[in-house]
Length: 391
Image (cartoon, rainbow, N blue to C red):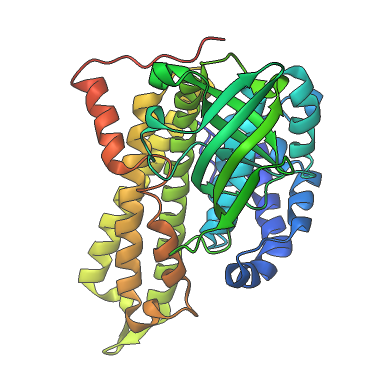
């Protein structure tokens, strides 16, 4: 394996090899069952925790490893190679959606209790922002959190929540000042067993192994100290972390497209038609050249955005471009790879069928492509400046 020394060291390469071996040994034998049942066994979360995989980017004092962002890049890329977008999503949604908010906005007491246990894999978290009546329209959310003495009362609903049924705790966005719209949102940490919470699993086209839920909050009473960060500062917190989520989905996209190409090329070398292997037909060779070119451009861009994020640059525009372009390219590449397998590409015994379904969520989840185009247009056309949340 060649190391790109601009981004990766020998230590990164060793981590990639060991994580790939871990996935093949501990995860791959269970994937087919989890894809069929839609339930990921709890033991694997603890194994991820024992190996330190949930703590790559988190402080040592809570059990993390405090490593650079390219360990996370490797974590994401290798998860795509086992061909279960649902399993991958369950892992990174815990580690980089829920835990990111706990680490960034949680009080010391919250981090001591929840971040440490999340890193060890003892408990699972989910992030609850999207609602049935408004996906990308975060400012239009209807869930409320009303202060009553030393408690908040939460009412409302969330949907499309990854780990929404598995999770032991929920990071919930709710309006504490509805009159202020987007400027009246706050973030809360809510225990799963709090009375008034109910969740139902959704039936999806892809990501079959992951638990995606609709969650209802009916007069859910939580202590006021479960507020994370400042009251009414939730919107900038969400927007700031959206950049990371979008970069994650961009990296996921280039990685699954790369895996699809590798598999397809192996197939083409072995498949004989009209007296020669498929990789000798010029029309197919040139199609592969086009696809590889697109994927390599996305990968190089995504690595550069990750590097800028590591250096503290606020990469809202770049992360939006990453997700917009990379997910589009992944969909196109996987579509074409499936075509190159002919009838076998349509069969569930081959990996392209599942990959095709799983990939389709890329341009939808974490901000639709239509919304991302508007975000980018506001930045480059309207000269709008997005600023990080106040610390």
